[in-house]
Length: 329
Image 1 (cartoon, rainbow, N blue to C red):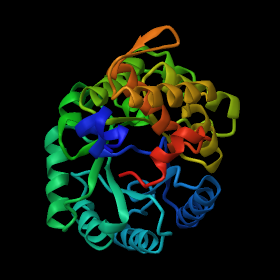
Image 2: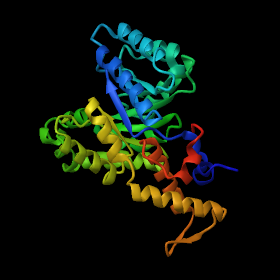
Image 3: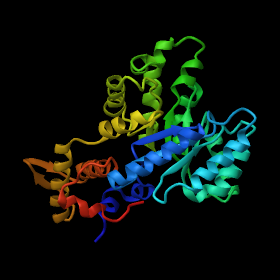
Image 4: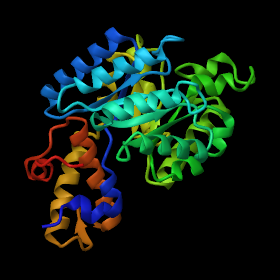
């Protein structure tokens, strides 16, 4: 029997779903702790529920880029078998970019889930990165991009359209700085980044570009990691108002709140399971359910509810678990 994911999502199903949390670390001790925490939470949840992105751009000391790249390779190769490890390399115009790709993708590409390229300005930057991966023997690796300037926001739809691009993130700090003081520092804060019109516009453009091309919009940094209430509120706005389906963590204390905020509610999970089983029994034809007409459009929505529930470690109803027994791509 064909799996519901293939029936309802079609070609999009082959791209796979990304964990809702992407945890960044660049200092050696923190990178090692992040991978250890990922392994522990994989045991706890029964699946790897967040990515760990090892950071070369901000993590590598100036002049020590080669040594840091070698460290990242070591960590990736020695990560747990079920680990989801990614690497943020230097921008395509940085002197260390080519060495980053040759070393990291060339030696550890088979253990990585993606390469994050910062300061992407155009589709041409994505193409350069893709060709560099191909030359390093990592044709299977997807790219993710960090949008950090007004010009890049303007080109977000073209960047998202590149077939190698998997996800776009918003670089808040650099975006605000690029305006030369026209956006006040408040625009980088936990509240201002959701209210200043230029920042709001940029977030919505990136989210819309991703959804237009079947890519994943990933909300970037919220620096107020010690204020859990403020962070949860920010994560909730990103997910429920701005259309983001993934979010960065820059501190271990942010991981579980992201998983909780981006997870569907228990009643929605229950409805999704019941509805999809009724739809499957009807051969995915339109049905009446709870007094409403439901069809493929709503089936797709509720299937993605179950996928998000599974990806965030939520408890699934017994009748839905069978759809997730085998590991999905």
